[in-house]
Image (cartoon, rainbow, N blue to C red; front, side, top):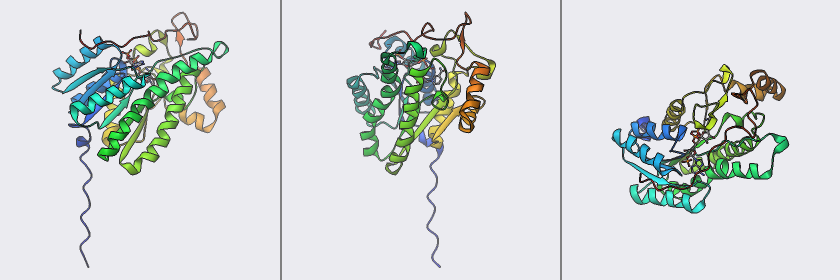
Length: 294
Ligand SMILES: NC(=O)c1ccc[n+]([C@@H]2O[C@H](COP(=O)([O-])OP(=O)(O)OC[C@H]3O[C@@H](n4cnc5c(N)ncnc54)[C@H](OP(=O)(O)O)[C@@H]3O)[C@@H](O)[C@H]2O)c1
């Protein structure tokens, strides 16, 4: 009887991030910034992208303090040319691109009775196309390398909509749907896709909005650690925190039960004045592309 062929050893999960080139969009703040730091701490080379150059310069200094190689590229994810330059500069500097984390996003909320298609378009531009554009730009490099990993920071709202958040929900449902298809189509090419669906996260995104303790915001570092873990384990989907993902299971069983849960715990949150966070709620400040030099 011939000896069985030796089994290929599973790759050491640490190797899936050490010395890898990781591009993070939305790196100037919140989850993206925390993710850039978490990858740097794990031994990755990090490329940070966002519009605010000053915030990127601060991140670069923090990453270098960790001993990481870092490059900041001012980028507007709503602009095709800008995203193309991000990928080109990454490959020119490092010779490859291993992981793309699409975290750039904007919280666009409007009560349905005041909704315009412009609100929907604004949200889709940053939250959907702004995540898909960098992915499409990275794909030719992933294909040439025979490997790569796309991480889409979506939201639990893509499993259960919340009042006043239709522009945001529409974009995140689209993104989760896109990622679901991409994961299956890209698998034969050695390319992994992870969809990250956080509940509330304590960042500038939801500043000024209050929540029931059941949806108490988690720190962005929790999401960042989950993202690094997901890349090491090549996980398909990550929902966090565990208590928030209950709404996903409730919605799968019964939409009305999930609606009741949303009403019971006011999951959409409220402003300090007690009002619902509608159009008058805090919206992300507009920003233009800035050079990263201070
Ligand atoms: N916070 C939450 O409760 C929560 C929950 C679930 C999912 N998420 C998702 O997590 C992601 C990160 O949000 P966050 O909570 O970390 O919010 P954040 O602190 O406000 O960060 C948003 C980031 O997106 C960047 N950004 C916005 N528009 C951009 C554009 N046109 N081009 C390039 N970068 C742009 C911002 O940078 P510049 O302004 O410098 O461009 C910033 O770095 C988003 O996709 C969001 O939908 C957040």
